[in-house]
View 1 (cartoon, rainbow, N blue to C red):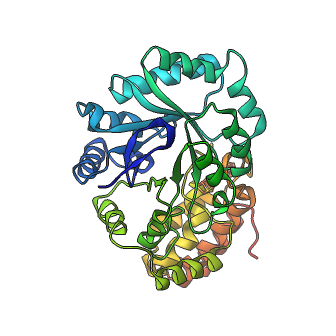
View 2: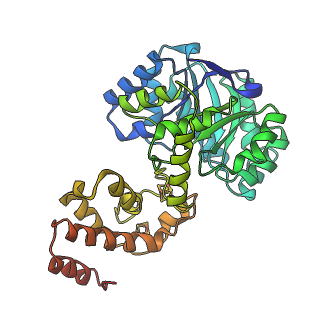
View 3: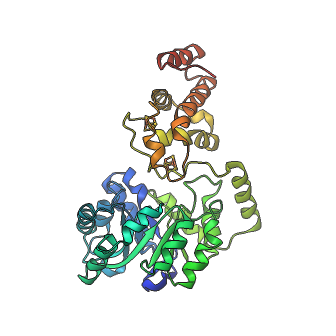
Length: 358
Ligand code: SF4
Ligand code: SF4
Protein backbone atom coordinates (compact mmCIF):
# COMPACT_ATOMS: atom_id res chain seq x y z
CA UNK A 1 0.00 0.00 0.00
CA UNK A 2 1.15 3.56 -0.69
CA UNK A 3 2.90 5.21 2.25
CA UNK A 4 2.17 8.75 3.44
CA UNK A 5 4.39 11.07 5.46
CA UNK A 6 2.68 11.82 8.78
CA UNK A 7 3.72 15.44 9.06
CA UNK A 8 6.77 16.39 11.06
CA UNK A 9 6.92 12.97 12.74
CA UNK A 10 8.48 11.82 9.42
CA UNK A 11 6.73 8.49 10.03
CA UNK A 12 5.77 6.85 6.73
CA UNK A 13 2.36 5.34 7.40
CA UNK A 14 0.08 3.31 5.16
CA UNK A 15 -2.44 5.36 3.15
CA UNK A 16 -5.13 3.74 5.27
CA UNK A 17 -4.54 3.22 8.95
CA UNK A 18 -6.16 0.49 11.02
CA UNK A 19 -8.56 1.79 13.69
CA UNK A 20 -8.31 -0.87 16.40
CA UNK A 21 -11.25 0.14 18.60
CA UNK A 22 -13.60 -2.54 17.20
CA UNK A 23 -11.27 -5.48 17.90
CA UNK A 24 -12.28 -5.14 21.54
CA UNK A 25 -15.61 -6.67 20.51
CA UNK A 26 -14.08 -9.94 19.24
CA UNK A 27 -12.05 -12.62 21.01
CA UNK A 28 -8.25 -12.50 21.13
CA UNK A 29 -7.71 -15.07 18.34
CA UNK A 30 -10.11 -13.32 15.98
CA UNK A 31 -8.48 -9.99 16.77
CA UNK A 32 -5.02 -11.39 15.98
CA UNK A 33 -6.27 -12.92 12.74
CA UNK A 34 -7.80 -9.65 11.56
CA UNK A 35 -4.76 -7.55 12.52
CA UNK A 36 -2.32 -9.90 10.76
CA UNK A 37 -4.58 -10.04 7.71
CA UNK A 38 -4.42 -6.24 7.54
CA UNK A 39 -0.65 -6.23 8.01
CA UNK A 40 -0.23 -8.80 5.23
CA UNK A 41 -2.19 -6.49 2.91
CA UNK A 42 -0.04 -3.45 3.51
CA UNK A 43 -1.45 -1.76 6.61
CA UNK A 44 1.50 -0.63 8.74
CA UNK A 45 -0.24 1.98 10.93
CA UNK A 46 -2.39 0.81 13.84
CA UNK A 47 -4.23 3.08 16.26
CA UNK A 48 -5.55 1.90 19.61
CA UNK A 49 -6.16 3.42 23.06
CA UNK A 50 -5.83 2.57 26.72
CA UNK A 51 -9.57 3.13 26.95
CA UNK A 52 -10.48 0.49 24.34
CA UNK A 53 -10.51 -2.34 26.91
CA UNK A 54 -8.76 -5.39 25.32
CA UNK A 55 -7.85 -3.67 22.03
CA UNK A 56 -4.43 -2.45 23.11
CA UNK A 57 -3.19 -5.73 24.58
CA UNK A 58 -4.65 -7.80 21.72
CA UNK A 59 -3.03 -5.49 19.18
CA UNK A 60 0.30 -5.75 21.02
CA UNK A 61 0.15 -9.54 20.92
CA UNK A 62 -0.88 -9.62 17.26
CA UNK A 63 1.99 -7.36 16.18
CA UNK A 64 4.63 -8.76 18.52
CA UNK A 65 7.99 -9.19 16.82
CA UNK A 66 7.27 -6.90 13.85
CA UNK A 67 9.33 -4.06 15.38
CA UNK A 68 9.90 -1.13 13.01
CA UNK A 69 7.84 -2.72 10.24
CA UNK A 70 4.72 -1.38 11.96
CA UNK A 71 3.86 1.98 13.51
CA UNK A 72 1.65 1.83 16.58
CA UNK A 73 -0.28 4.70 18.12
CA UNK A 74 -2.15 4.65 21.39
CA UNK A 75 -3.73 7.25 23.68
CA UNK A 76 -4.83 8.00 27.21
CA UNK A 77 -7.48 10.23 28.79
CA UNK A 78 -5.49 10.84 31.94
CA UNK A 79 -4.28 14.29 32.91
CA UNK A 80 -3.51 13.35 36.52
CA UNK A 81 0.22 12.57 36.67
CA UNK A 82 -0.02 9.44 38.77
CA UNK A 83 -2.72 7.95 36.56
CA UNK A 84 -0.97 9.03 33.36
CA UNK A 85 2.22 7.34 34.52
CA UNK A 86 0.30 4.14 35.26
CA UNK A 87 -1.55 4.40 31.94
CA UNK A 88 1.62 4.99 29.90
CA UNK A 89 3.41 2.07 31.54
CA UNK A 90 0.44 -0.23 30.97
CA UNK A 91 0.35 0.79 27.28
CA UNK A 92 4.10 0.24 27.04
CA UNK A 93 3.75 -3.28 28.44
CA UNK A 94 0.64 -4.07 26.40
CA UNK A 95 2.17 -3.06 23.09
CA UNK A 96 5.28 -5.21 23.61
CA UNK A 97 7.56 -2.85 21.70
CA UNK A 98 10.87 -1.17 22.49
CA UNK A 99 9.09 2.18 22.14
CA UNK A 100 5.63 3.57 21.47
CA UNK A 101 5.60 5.34 18.10
CA UNK A 102 2.85 7.83 18.90
CA UNK A 103 1.14 8.58 22.23
CA UNK A 104 -1.86 10.88 22.00
CA UNK A 105 -3.82 12.82 24.60
CA UNK A 106 -7.26 11.27 24.12
CA UNK A 107 -10.42 13.37 23.60
CA UNK A 108 -9.26 16.80 24.64
CA UNK A 109 -12.53 18.64 24.18
CA UNK A 110 -12.36 21.50 26.68
CA UNK A 111 -10.03 24.41 27.23
CA UNK A 112 -9.36 23.48 30.86
CA UNK A 113 -8.22 20.00 29.74
CA UNK A 114 -5.78 21.54 27.27
CA UNK A 115 -4.50 23.87 30.02
CA UNK A 116 -4.03 20.89 32.34
CA UNK A 117 -1.96 19.05 29.71
CA UNK A 118 0.27 22.04 29.00
CA UNK A 119 0.86 23.20 32.56
CA UNK A 120 4.40 23.30 33.93
CA UNK A 121 5.42 19.91 35.28
CA UNK A 122 2.26 18.44 33.74
CA UNK A 123 1.34 15.60 31.37
CA UNK A 124 3.09 17.05 28.32
CA UNK A 125 6.38 17.32 30.18
CA UNK A 126 5.88 13.77 31.40
CA UNK A 127 5.60 12.53 27.80
CA UNK A 128 8.55 14.63 26.70
CA UNK A 129 10.57 12.90 29.41
CA UNK A 130 9.47 9.51 28.02
CA UNK A 131 10.75 10.64 24.63
CA UNK A 132 14.13 11.52 26.14
CA UNK A 133 14.24 8.07 27.72
CA UNK A 134 13.63 6.48 24.30
CA UNK A 135 10.32 4.93 25.31
CA UNK A 136 8.25 7.19 23.06
CA UNK A 137 8.86 8.73 19.65
CA UNK A 138 6.04 11.23 19.08
CA UNK A 139 3.27 13.09 20.93
CA UNK A 140 -0.17 13.80 19.49
CA UNK A 141 -3.58 15.02 20.49
CA UNK A 142 -7.13 13.89 19.66
CA UNK A 143 -10.35 15.86 19.96
CA UNK A 144 -13.91 16.13 18.71
CA UNK A 145 -13.70 19.93 18.78
CA UNK A 146 -11.87 21.42 15.76
CA UNK A 147 -12.22 24.90 17.27
CA UNK A 148 -10.22 23.90 20.34
CA UNK A 149 -7.54 22.30 18.17
CA UNK A 150 -7.07 25.69 16.49
CA UNK A 151 -5.69 26.76 19.88
CA UNK A 152 -3.81 23.55 20.64
CA UNK A 153 -1.78 23.23 17.43
CA UNK A 154 -0.05 26.64 17.50
CA UNK A 155 1.49 25.72 20.89
CA UNK A 156 3.92 23.63 18.83
CA UNK A 157 3.69 20.82 21.39
CA UNK A 158 1.85 18.24 19.28
CA UNK A 159 3.18 16.43 16.26
CA UNK A 160 -0.13 14.93 15.15
CA UNK A 161 -3.80 15.79 15.50
CA UNK A 162 -6.61 13.25 15.30
CA UNK A 163 -10.13 14.54 14.64
CA UNK A 164 -13.41 13.17 13.24
CA UNK A 165 -13.53 13.77 9.51
CA UNK A 166 -16.08 12.42 7.08
CA UNK A 167 -18.48 13.67 4.45
CA UNK A 168 -20.87 14.92 7.16
CA UNK A 169 -18.37 16.11 9.78
CA UNK A 170 -16.23 18.19 7.44
CA UNK A 171 -15.70 21.33 9.55
CA UNK A 172 -11.93 20.62 9.95
CA UNK A 173 -11.45 21.21 6.21
CA UNK A 174 -12.11 24.89 6.62
CA UNK A 175 -9.49 26.00 9.15
CA UNK A 176 -7.99 23.14 11.13
CA UNK A 177 -6.54 21.08 8.29
CA UNK A 178 -4.98 24.12 6.55
CA UNK A 179 -3.50 25.14 9.92
CA UNK A 180 -2.12 21.64 10.58
CA UNK A 181 -0.63 21.62 7.09
CA UNK A 182 1.03 24.98 7.59
CA UNK A 183 2.58 23.73 10.86
CA UNK A 184 3.53 20.36 9.31
CA UNK A 185 1.43 18.48 11.88
CA UNK A 186 0.35 14.96 10.90
CA UNK A 187 -3.41 14.70 10.29
CA UNK A 188 -5.27 11.53 11.32
CA UNK A 189 -8.97 11.21 10.48
CA UNK A 190 -11.05 9.24 12.96
CA UNK A 191 -14.60 8.12 12.11
CA UNK A 192 -14.12 8.27 8.33
CA UNK A 193 -17.36 6.31 7.88
CA UNK A 194 -19.12 8.05 10.79
CA UNK A 195 -19.79 4.77 12.56
CA UNK A 196 -21.08 3.06 9.42
CA UNK A 197 -24.06 5.30 8.74
CA UNK A 198 -23.37 5.82 5.05
CA UNK A 199 -25.04 3.68 2.42
CA UNK A 200 -21.59 2.77 1.08
CA UNK A 201 -18.58 2.90 3.40
CA UNK A 202 -16.20 2.63 0.47
CA UNK A 203 -17.42 5.93 -0.99
CA UNK A 204 -17.04 7.57 2.42
CA UNK A 205 -13.41 6.44 2.66
CA UNK A 206 -12.77 7.41 -0.97
CA UNK A 207 -14.06 10.90 -0.20
CA UNK A 208 -11.33 11.37 2.43
CA UNK A 209 -8.66 9.89 0.19
CA UNK A 210 -8.96 12.94 -2.06
CA UNK A 211 -6.96 14.76 0.67
CA UNK A 212 -3.50 13.25 0.14
CA UNK A 213 -2.00 14.23 3.50
CA UNK A 214 -4.93 13.06 5.64
CA UNK A 215 -4.68 9.51 7.00
CA UNK A 216 -8.06 7.91 7.68
CA UNK A 217 -8.19 5.12 10.26
CA UNK A 218 -11.44 3.20 9.67
CA UNK A 219 -12.29 0.91 12.58
CA UNK A 220 -12.25 -2.77 11.66
CA UNK A 221 -12.70 -6.16 13.31
CA UNK A 222 -13.74 -8.30 10.35
CA UNK A 223 -11.84 -9.50 7.26
CA UNK A 224 -14.64 -8.25 4.97
CA UNK A 225 -14.26 -4.74 6.40
CA UNK A 226 -10.55 -4.77 5.53
CA UNK A 227 -11.27 -5.96 1.98
CA UNK A 228 -13.97 -3.34 1.61
CA UNK A 229 -11.68 -0.53 2.74
CA UNK A 230 -8.89 -1.75 0.48
CA UNK A 231 -11.26 -1.45 -2.46
CA UNK A 232 -11.68 2.22 -1.61
CA UNK A 233 -8.04 2.64 -2.68
CA UNK A 234 -8.92 1.65 -6.25
CA UNK A 235 -10.07 4.69 -8.12
CA UNK A 236 -11.27 8.13 -7.16
CA UNK A 237 -14.68 9.22 -5.93
CA UNK A 238 -17.30 9.45 -8.67
CA UNK A 239 -20.23 11.82 -9.17
CA UNK A 240 -22.86 9.17 -8.29
CA UNK A 241 -20.93 8.28 -5.11
CA UNK A 242 -20.87 11.94 -4.09
CA UNK A 243 -24.60 12.13 -4.80
CA UNK A 244 -25.29 9.20 -2.46
CA UNK A 245 -23.11 10.68 0.31
CA UNK A 246 -25.05 13.92 0.01
CA UNK A 247 -28.36 12.05 0.16
CA UNK A 248 -27.13 10.26 3.32
CA UNK A 249 -26.09 13.59 4.84
CA UNK A 250 -29.48 15.11 4.23
CA UNK A 251 -31.24 12.10 5.70
CA UNK A 252 -29.07 11.92 8.85
CA UNK A 253 -28.63 15.58 9.77
CA UNK A 254 -25.92 16.10 12.40
CA UNK A 255 -27.41 14.48 15.54
CA UNK A 256 -26.73 10.78 15.05
CA UNK A 257 -24.79 8.12 16.91
CA UNK A 258 -21.27 7.39 15.63
CA UNK A 259 -20.88 4.02 17.42
CA UNK A 260 -17.90 5.18 19.45
CA UNK A 261 -19.35 3.72 22.68
CA UNK A 262 -17.75 6.38 24.87
CA UNK A 263 -21.16 6.61 26.58
CA UNK A 264 -20.87 3.06 27.89
CA UNK A 265 -21.10 1.35 30.32
CA UNK A 266 -24.42 2.18 31.94
CA UNK A 267 -24.64 1.54 35.70
CA UNK A 268 -27.98 -0.19 35.02
CA UNK A 269 -26.45 -2.33 32.25
CA UNK A 270 -28.64 -0.74 29.61
CA UNK A 271 -27.21 -0.87 26.08
CA UNK A 272 -27.73 2.84 25.59
CA UNK A 273 -25.59 3.29 22.47
CA UNK A 274 -27.15 0.30 20.75
CA UNK A 275 -30.66 1.47 21.60
CA UNK A 276 -30.18 4.97 20.22
CA UNK A 277 -28.81 3.77 16.91
CA UNK A 278 -31.03 0.73 16.46
CA UNK A 279 -33.61 2.62 14.37
CA UNK A 280 -30.86 3.54 11.90
CA UNK A 281 -29.52 -0.04 11.90
CA UNK A 282 -32.85 -1.76 11.25
CA UNK A 283 -33.78 0.79 8.62
CA UNK A 284 -30.65 -0.31 6.74
CA UNK A 285 -30.76 -4.07 7.34
CA UNK A 286 -34.55 -4.49 7.36
CA UNK A 287 -37.04 -4.46 10.22
CA UNK A 288 -37.62 -8.19 9.73
CA UNK A 289 -34.12 -8.76 11.20
CA UNK A 290 -35.39 -7.74 14.63
CA UNK A 291 -35.37 -10.67 17.08
CA UNK A 292 -36.52 -11.40 20.63
CA UNK A 293 -33.08 -10.62 22.11
CA UNK A 294 -33.45 -7.10 20.67
CA UNK A 295 -36.86 -6.83 22.30
CA UNK A 296 -35.19 -7.75 25.60
CA UNK A 297 -32.63 -4.92 25.17
CA UNK A 298 -35.36 -2.39 24.37
CA UNK A 299 -37.43 -3.58 27.33
CA UNK A 300 -34.44 -3.01 29.59
CA UNK A 301 -34.12 0.48 28.11
CA UNK A 302 -37.54 1.36 29.54
CA UNK A 303 -35.92 1.17 32.99
CA UNK A 304 -33.39 3.94 32.29
CA UNK A 305 -33.18 5.99 35.50
CA UNK A 306 -32.24 9.08 33.43
CA UNK A 307 -29.13 9.52 35.59
CA UNK A 308 -27.39 11.25 32.65
CA UNK A 309 -24.05 9.43 33.04
CA UNK A 310 -24.06 8.21 29.43
CA UNK A 311 -25.09 11.62 28.06
CA UNK A 312 -22.22 13.30 29.94
CA UNK A 313 -19.74 11.01 28.17
CA UNK A 314 -21.12 11.43 24.62
CA UNK A 315 -18.71 13.70 22.72
CA UNK A 316 -21.51 14.59 20.28
CA UNK A 317 -23.83 15.83 23.04
CA UNK A 318 -26.62 13.48 22.01
CA UNK A 319 -29.50 13.85 24.50
CA UNK A 320 -29.25 10.24 25.67
CA UNK A 321 -31.06 10.94 28.93
CA UNK A 322 -34.28 11.35 26.94
CA UNK A 323 -33.39 9.30 23.87
CA UNK A 324 -32.90 5.95 25.62
CA UNK A 325 -36.49 5.68 26.84
CA UNK A 326 -38.01 7.28 23.74
CA UNK A 327 -36.09 5.01 21.35
CA UNK A 328 -36.83 1.93 23.47
CA UNK A 329 -40.53 2.68 23.17
CA UNK A 330 -40.27 3.30 19.42
CA UNK A 331 -38.36 0.07 18.88
CA UNK A 332 -40.84 -1.95 20.95
CA UNK A 333 -43.61 -0.48 18.85
CA UNK A 334 -41.71 -1.78 15.78
CA UNK A 335 -41.52 -5.14 17.58
CA UNK A 336 -45.31 -5.17 17.68
CA UNK A 337 -45.45 -4.41 13.94
CA UNK A 338 -43.06 -7.30 13.33
CA UNK A 339 -45.25 -9.65 15.37
CA UNK A 340 -42.56 -10.29 17.99
CA UNK A 341 -44.78 -9.06 20.84
CA UNK A 342 -48.48 -8.19 21.03
CA UNK A 343 -49.92 -4.76 21.69
CA UNK A 344 -51.07 -6.03 25.09
CA UNK A 345 -47.53 -7.17 25.95
CA UNK A 346 -46.19 -3.76 24.96
CA UNK A 347 -48.70 -2.04 27.22
CA UNK A 348 -47.77 -4.41 30.09
CA UNK A 349 -44.09 -3.59 29.66
CA UNK A 350 -44.80 0.12 29.72
CA UNK A 351 -47.00 -0.17 32.81
CA UNK A 352 -44.41 -2.31 34.60
CA UNK A 353 -41.78 0.38 33.94
CA UNK A 354 -44.16 3.11 35.11
CA UNK A 355 -44.35 4.66 31.63
CA UNK A 356 -47.13 5.77 29.37
CA UNK A 357 -47.50 5.12 25.66
CA UNK A 358 -47.24 8.18 23.46
S1 SF4 B 1 -29.23 7.80 31.52
FE1 SF4 B 1 -30.12 5.73 31.47
S2 SF4 B 1 -28.97 4.62 29.92
FE2 SF4 B 1 -27.77 6.44 30.48
S3 SF4 B 1 -26.35 5.73 32.06
FE3 SF4 B 1 -28.17 6.56 33.13
S4 SF4 B 1 -29.51 4.76 33.38
FE4 SF4 B 1 -27.98 4.20 31.87
S1 SF4 C 1 -24.39 7.84 21.86
FE1 SF4 C 1 -22.64 9.24 21.67
S2 SF4 C 1 -21.02 8.29 22.91
FE2 SF4 C 1 -22.58 6.74 22.59
S3 SF4 C 1 -21.89 5.59 20.83
FE3 SF4 C 1 -23.27 7.17 20.07
S4 SF4 C 1 -21.98 8.93 19.55
FE4 SF4 C 1 -20.75 7.55 20.81
